[in-house]
Image 1 (cartoon, rainbow, N blue to C red):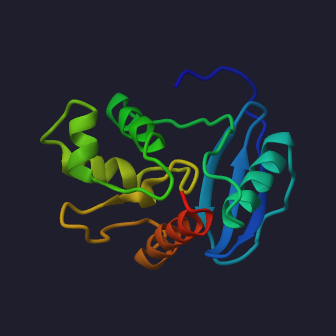
Image 2: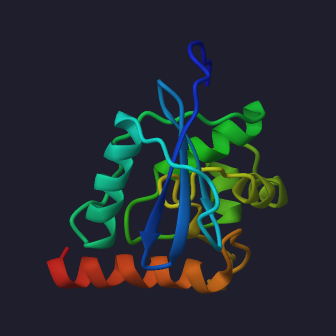
Image 3: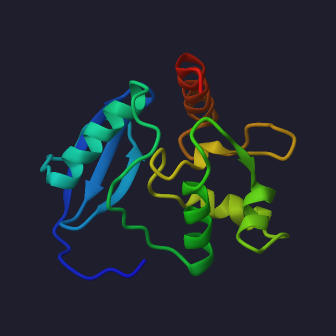
Length: 164
């Protein structure tokens, strides 16, 4: 994704049901979401962080299924293709690393898809938790497998509750 503009940084913490998150943005977009253990930085919010907090609240309460935020992600062309493919996985659904590799026209690159997932700096918003092993096993999640399971279960419960 091309980027031009201010590099002024903003950050704040978000207490989620799966742990403390550090949200970072600049004047144009959200830059990263990181699982952290404690608050050790001064917070300074901007409009993008406030919107992210609102949308995360909606997501965790089961009201939001798709995020609508300006995102900034930096990676190789391959990683960007993977991250765009992840954004296409429907809420409450999952697919395999192999399926993502096939979708981006690199059918044998499923290990590289896993590596790109690991480098995703916008977990939850770019839903890498929805990618599972070919046999349905929960493999790899930078935030820990328990968080991946929690997010998948959360989305399934919302789908069931809404009767979708």
